[in-house]
Length: 96
Image (cartoon, rainbow, N blue to C red):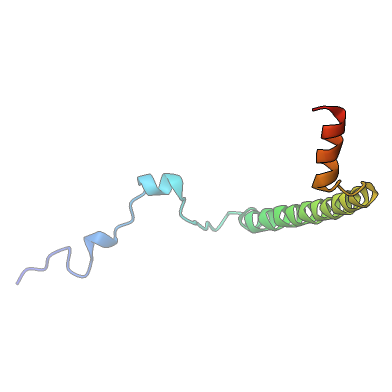
């Protein structure tokens, strides 16, 4: 029986170099000469961005609480609304 060159090899296991999916989501490749700091820079950059966004959210929450306290202060200084009968009587007396 003759040996075929494909025995033991699955042609579906072949690595395709240029696929449309690879253009969108690149495969992680490690090379012997590649610097590891560039590989780890991605998660570090995302962590730094997350910290900045959390600090921004904290600052915005502080501003919101400050505005809420100012609104409460303004509401306490405003006179209470007139009862409906007072407004109707004022309109009658004014001739409207």
